[in-house]
Image (tube, rainbow, N blue to C red; front, side, top):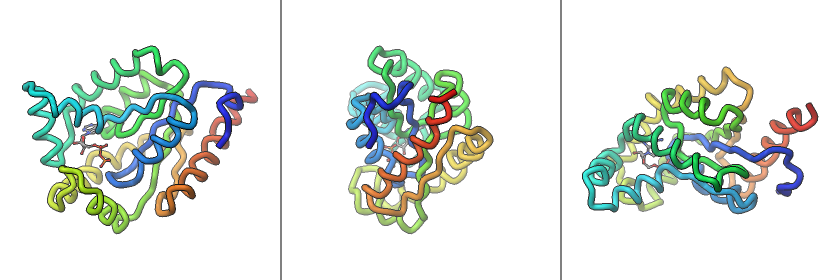
Amino acid sequence: MLGLAELAQPLQLVFFGAPGAGKGTQAERFARHYRIPKISTGEMLRRASDERTELGALVSETIHRGELVDDELMIDLVRSRLEEPDVANGFVLDGFPRTVVQARALDALVPHALIIALDVSADNLLRRLSSRGRTDDSLDVIRERLKIYESNTRPVLDYYRSRSMIAVVNGNRSEDAVTDAIEASIVRCLEPRETS
Ligand code: ADP
């Protein structure tokens, strides 16, 4: 992977893809390598759902139904996280945006983020999710999450396709091969801006 010094701007990466696409794994790798925070909305929500508050209970119910947490709540959550000082040198976002409303809000907050979309076949998604063993990974809930991905989240791809800052990466490969492909995309997408 390239070194931070080779990048002329803070790396603002957004990992996009269906549940099970490998966003979390790749986000973790890039965050560690570039020493920038990984912001995972799924992890933030799971933490919130462990708290014995009214909000925690609501979030827990939503996650275990395989549904999406309310846009307004998600946008507030991500906005306040992005206001923290540690994101000044860049960040990796995992799990947000999941709706077009969230994508528009993110655009306003971070206009130059690079979107990495991981493309993974339905067969592979099902296989990965059913071997993961998280409490929201039962077969019924997985099916619901994939359905909601198709209806609410996939349209975000078309939204980003109309802009230039998206790289679609084939995620049906080994973790290392996917990491290499993402790195190549980052270089390709950021180069023109460095020289301009
Ligand atoms: P996966 O790794 O399967 O993509 P995540 O850990 O990212 O799952 O998210 C787990 C759950 O948290 C989702 O199924 C959803 O209920 C909720 N969630 C996470 N991010 C968002 C978001 N941006 N908007 C709405 N709900 C979200």
